[in-house]
Image 1 (cartoon, rainbow, N blue to C red):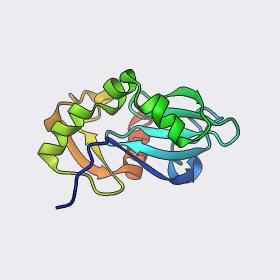
Image 2: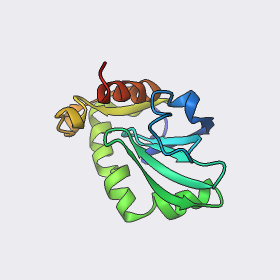
Image 3: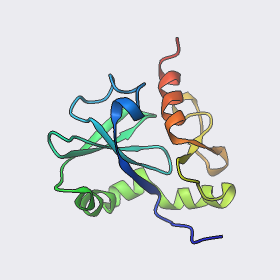
Length: 148
């Protein structure tokens, strides 16, 4: 087995929000038009090509916290993803490590998904997670917020 990264997030080639998060496009702040990555626990990193603003989208809440404009992705990482509050409450590396010990490392395009979702009464204890596809996860959470 190769080296397992302990960094609890992944970056992707920037993709349009309407393509990657179609169920959320009308619910997200309009300045964001691009997805640039996601955390192991299913938060998305959003970007505005117009303003240079970055935000972190929590689909469980749901909401986007803006972290302001940054000159590039490296600056966003340095100033935001290493911020102790973001590490503690968003990235949760210790929690992710416990889940990873139980379920194994994620494959590209996977996230750890709390079941049931926290807003539906899930506990978010390490044994309450399973693995799933990140983009399907976002669609399913949107549907759970808005059952028809």
